Image 1 (cartoon, rainbow, N blue to C red):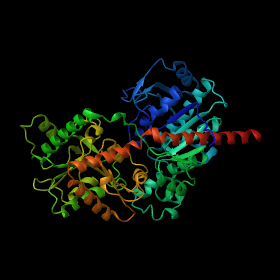
Image 2 (cartoon, helix red, strand yellow):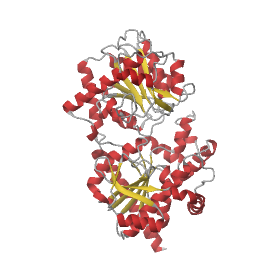
Image 3 (cartoon, rainbow, N blue to C red):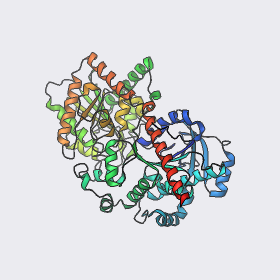
Image 4 (cartoon, rainbow, N blue to C red):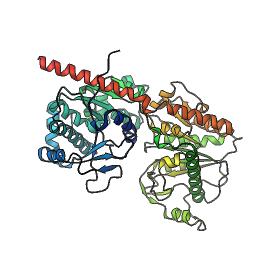
Length: 554
């Protein structure tokens, strides 16, 4: 096998660098330590400076770091950047760029990019403008570094762009720094997610869909245009799972050069006695909030089950999870109570003052018609989760075997009710359920097994398909259910069956299942998955060499 081309410098950019929004933050922040060990401070992350005057809890600014370069960037590129460390394991260098000055030039930039690569920004709306100007700014930052520090074509330099939000940076680099090799990773195609989210059958008809046509139909023209163009122009195109690779080839017109599955680092998972203590504390907190909200005590052996993630009601399978809880009543011999926590950030107004007061003062009982939500919502009546709970008549009465608690707030440690992070509560769960319909990878089930909490997911998630392409039971640590465009009812029934089966397990069986879950998690550590990024860098560098050689020959 030929020796891999190795990058000397890696610039990686994402809207989620030092900005915890979703799963990409987890991808980059957990991978950073592994890359930083290899590349030291020649690994540089670039993110948006969305709070230039405020405090960013994920970023430590170091004013003296690259101060001359910062001044150069300000003078020559009219961009303000802050340089410091991303406060994640490895503490890699992070550059935050204030891209807002480019908003005054956006029409000029859109016109220029159209003339260069034919990206259609005319129908743009929503977050397209800010994302595109941020992407363009990252290209300028990379060029500024390259020029200031005198890098040259003989050095292997990688510019890695994540998701459509950064694609304008890839266009910038291709035009102004052709000696830099480009990588573009789509974590989910914008048009595929839109097809699924609009209740159109994605999988059975995938081979019949035309990405450009669907973009017009679903009002996704600009996002699709920039994503498809980047996929076809970069030196190496990657995605995170085999299931999404098929989607990319059909909808974006290019088969990914390599699949880069999402790993994680287990340094955030406590070990030994600390793990036991934190699990005990988490269960104590979950029970205290639940019993205070419900107004009565739970059984000692109550089963704590949860789902979590972005509020994509259908795509994340939230609808199917809620339906499965109703099917639990079909198992007449099931005696254990089930407390289901739906930890999905919604249009939250504030923590419930009455609940917060009762948690602090147990003698002050909670008298409320609302035994469902831990926080107040702005609009109860148009919330999909609340509507489904009413449809299935979940009322959380004391005589009901299944209780459902909706936690609509970000669990960042200061939500006003739990005041613990998601991970600090996840460790206390007995079982998690993520029955995704559209899930290019699926960090939530991976995070679950990392904490030795068995999980249920589907073969339509990249993670589930990676674990096993075939259905398997919960005894394996990861229960996988066959899901298609049309079998939502059957999936809900299978979930209920798995929860029921788990509820019957004795202590030794549960211990074995939890061990199986942790074994699967170990196989997904970055030390196993980083090889796929090495391959991506190699492909990008080889293709860059071919491209620049061809240009020089001409």
